[in-house]
Amino acid sequence: MYALLILDMQVGLFHGPDKPWLGERLLLTLNDLVHRAQKAGSPIFLARHVGPAGSPIEPGSPFTQLIEGLALNGTEIIFEKTRPNAFACTHLADELHSQGVKTIVITGMKTQYCVDSTCRAVRDLGFEAILIEDGHTCSDTPLLSAAAIIDHHNVTLAGAFCRVMKAAECQFL
Image 1 (tube, rainbow, N blue to C red):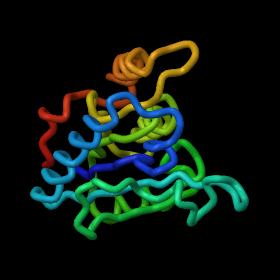
Image 2 (tube, rainbow, N blue to C red):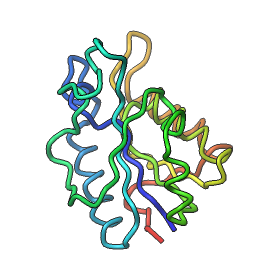
Image 3 (cartoon, rainbow, N blue to C red):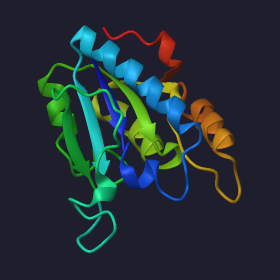
Image 4 (cartoon, rainbow, N blue to C red):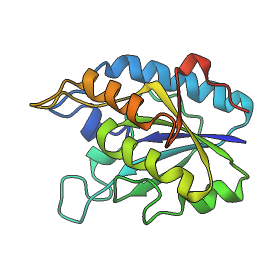
């Protein structure tokens, strides 16, 4: 069974000062994947990154809320994480195992942080991973454009850590 994992599609990252590259296109892609996962009966998990009390991203902060426009129907599992790796200090792996998930479809933000860290951890926990090539994003940095960061991670993570495919090619089994 496949599960869809959407990382950190939250107000503070998506609508913050460093706008995500092709953010609106990403939202359309994610909603298409959500609809297909829902139709297939695949579980959907959404991570929200939170920080310590008193920080701008403390639990309950408006910056940690999921962005409007995600095509959710209320059956999704939303959880908080405090580390880039969505499995670290969370119950995500246990929940996935309990639902019989074998393959995790990984999407969201930010490519070089949470997407990368989560992809690298998946196989160590007994799952297979699919990184959606056009299903993750980040912002430009002083050194690299977002497009270069995304391309680099799609190539670097492919094979050793996950399969990489376009959203249109992903079928929820």
